[in-house]
Length: 369
Image (cartoon, rainbow, N blue to C red; front, top):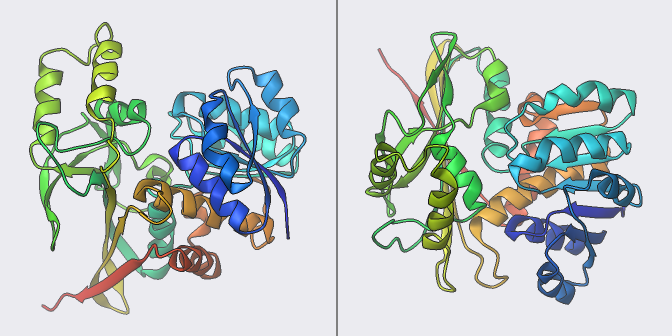
């Protein structure tokens, strides 16, 4: 079913989403305030419209001309853009890392007879889908962990890092307090705490630290949950040192962020990789089971698409396909984990990713007494 789709945001991920939708035969337009985006997408026969996302009236009028909307704006704009699209009575799949809970807009979506699926990226997003799926497959799920990082393939000092998505959102990961679940209780801890090593064969032993990525997953009936961001060893220690020097305080954070944005800007040959590990432990068929799923994905050199754009963007287009093909027809605002209880939806997303060579590898360990 061919649709007229608008992608709000033509950054690295938004552009990859637009290209994938176009390759699937849809009529695609990218909206952005940066006219330079047009030069990057015109070779793919993708249309462009200049749009100031802070002008919500213009956003409302613009999206009304389309069948379907993808939200790929910076997190601080995400909630208002989502609200505007729902008020325009349009279905939307959104990847914005908004600080607000998008489910607060559920009433608007239901009243307008439309659907929004939010946090439809890799983590949050694909990770949420698998959390929901694990909850439905285990007889009793005791713990769920997500370790994730967007990293350079060839890390270099002094940072051992390059920014593979919005640098503003990266800094947010380092400053926003992390919510996790311990023994059935939501607890809040400072970001970048409880650093632990996580080993990946043929890559490295990475540092994993608390970050606020659980979001809507906090509502799941899983007694122990944590999301941790991963970086090459040496990186987070420098960030913690900067924090201890007060460089992330309100009066300094703008200057600090601008400096880091420059330091972390990828050069032409800075190819990235996305690494994620999901660990679920609980009871299946009267056995103590640990299911581990790994995702390791690399920059697509043929198409010039970063791994973070691939894993985030293709998850988004997979979910968009669920709505467009009417495999998911419920009205309201939904988090990705709500799709996880339906194995057919999960398989559809995983197949969509597999076709694009984004592969999840699963292994199972049975504990013996």
